[in-house]
Length: 276
Length: 328
Image 1 (cartoon, chains in turn cyan, purple):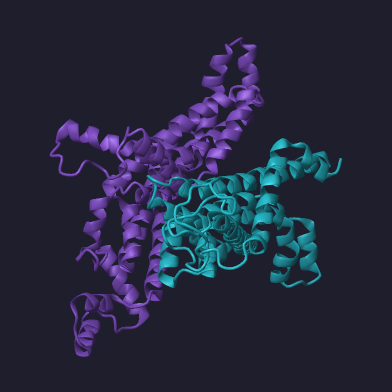
Image 2: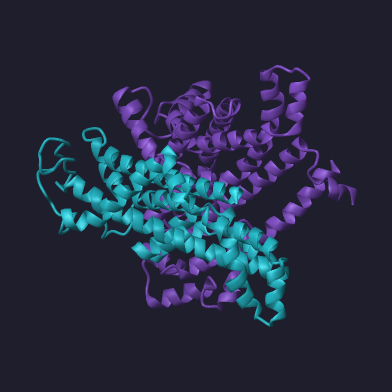
């Protein structure tokens, strides 16, 4: 049975894949369905959902179209989540490979730095970083990656420690390859699978952190974010709770979709490995 | 006892290095921030260029980065975190005033997530693959996907706005003049919603860990032996399987403390609990970078202390820990 078919046989994985596909469709079609500025005024203020056919999810305090904001927010959430996770995995894999392959003082220093990053609450670190450097999409991505690379680094290091004793590494040494070349061309690719298995958890955490940052007003001010929408709705929590609830549900579904699809992928590949 | 002491000594040495790295990190962030202490001071009091020159010289800010780092470390050794411009008070005093509220919130939320999470984990793990196991697994995953601040807002809408069971925010009723037990009950009532919001998010983690741990233990030989002895299923689950799966959760308690501190920033902001997290948000809003970095330093120390405590508890629970070192 092909891995894809096995993946499609687990109901959780299917649910996750459907959610993620819908999300990507939302993000990609945002400019198609809602061209122009999603933060422009589209109708009367505080229109409840399901009242007007052209504004199905209603409008916020300033009369902005909630549905348009939701679509454009999907774009920010996905972009930040994927970019931050990619950066964290890359940095973690490189640091972990260096520490594990070099050993000795390099290993000791790199692991103490990793400890230090794990000691500081990552959300506080992200908060400080964004507030000092200034909120923009790139800075938010860097701030989230700053607190997320430690997990991948530890996993990569543990994996490299077991790989570096293998015969093919000794072979690479014998033919005179530079140690750095061995580390990054021979060892790192073999250490990647368990590191990549962390990606769904890291993407999910990155999406949640981005939402919390923009909820506290530290998101990119020029972009619609779900966290920012929830913060906006908080001012009218008593009269128009739907403004906070709708983007929150979108967030929950997104993160759940990432988890479910991720578990499905890990499970199918794990089964395949144990079969072979 | 020597066993635990040896372990503690080794961990303390490691912690000092880690703390030093954190301090250097916050110093770099402080340097990267636009403006320095003199700019902040002049902005609030006013003054001319000569005054700025004088203050920079007096506060040692005109010296090299290395000297400034040394001065910074020296001040920290004396527990001096500097002056907060926003509060016009020493940062240490402001933080110490807010710390108890955060500790209370974190402690209660940890107890809730650990207690309920491991209990539900035992319930799910007692019968692996059963309906309740699958239901709780998926349910906990869904709970894990909920952003804490949003859960807090939804709780406010339901329990504070609609049902009016609990207050909407704050740590106690303002100027109520309550003392003693009355005051404690008042604080408890205010903390119900924030503790639930913070605790529920991490509950899923303990549930899933407990369940996964039990699934491992079920396969061990001693479980088979316990069955062969004719022990009741209830006794096997509680005394043999759950008990052995509980140990890793204790380690998680320490590892999660940093996450929980981060989570309390948003929860305290949502429920306006005057704690460390809310202080961090106020520092961001007021652009009070020294205060924000002071909070980070205190959080790091707090996380280190919690992890040390967890290590000690763990050494008592598991006789294997540190046994090799004590023997050597």
